[in-house]
Image: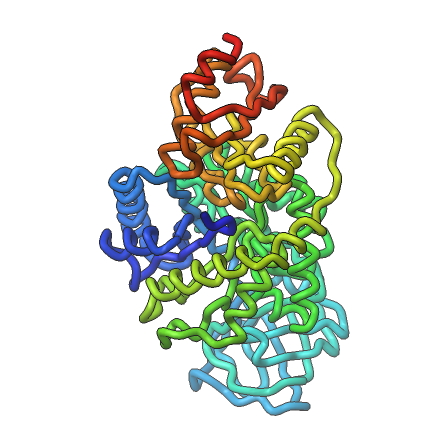
Length: 478
């Protein structure tokens, strides 16, 4: 009975059948496979375990493969590391000679192509900051604005420019093909700067997985509307955003992007450092709990655990904490007021009107659930956008659709046989609602469907139906 979904990253702390099953039972709806870590054999083994848990518990689980993206790093130092003092001069260049206190290699000529004086370069997650004074095709002379220890192969961020770097590296292309053949449901795309980055991944995926764009660069924030248009979902990756943007900018961006995604009926995940202290502690900080609650109040579809569940000492406790926070927030009367206030009126199609009517009926009568038949998942996403006060039961003959919808707010997914009669659909929906405990024989549900059946884009029927099958057979048309 929880609406917001929980994404748990798997890793060394959560790679066995027992732990993965316990994570799902504790509340994880989606499992993230981080392609930055582990071999293809490791990923395949975790994928197989998730599908086994899904079968054993007769539960729909989504699997999200998170591609690493290109990594921009400095070269190596003769001494392994150097101390950079604030105000000192430091050069980045393409010379592969070992670095020292005055310079180091940056083996990415594409960065030098677009650098301009005044641009910032961030090293080691922003712990070291450099300001470009002069630059050319193979060098950048900088001033150290924030000093610290710089060491071999630390990452580099370039927040002020759009880099001529593809979002997919050679490794990513190989990983993408591997996980698509494996059968993941979602692909998370890193280093997105423009809509074309997403289109390339979509072309390579060829419909085998839905595409989720990670918003982690200022360029992606600026181009967000065009990126969203070609994406199936969004992840607000606050960690990288907080490196490349002033940290105070991140909360407003998170709120704005969440609302835009909801208006577009596309799921959005809020991610990074949500319960960071639980990597080493069985209890979160109060600030972390408040952070999780804020994402839920704001209406995000899902909240995500990274190292907390992948490498932390308390993965089950972290998922349980998220679940407890979500239930408490969603039981708060203020939550419903906030969610309703954010709703915008969208009346562009028959389907829009039907899902809005379904939600309005649940708000004015004693309806226990909205049951929707969907081939591609679009109708279920439209209902989720309405944020109804009752559970959404998505019924689909397509298992891939049911799994992808496990990421969407309030949506509970059931794989059903193909149907060709409306009465059969109503009976099937009533049985599913009773089986899952959403309604009893004396209750009513709302059923949405499209005629002709099994045809995409035909949602055109809304029925308030009893859960008592005898009444359905006596009153419903064939």
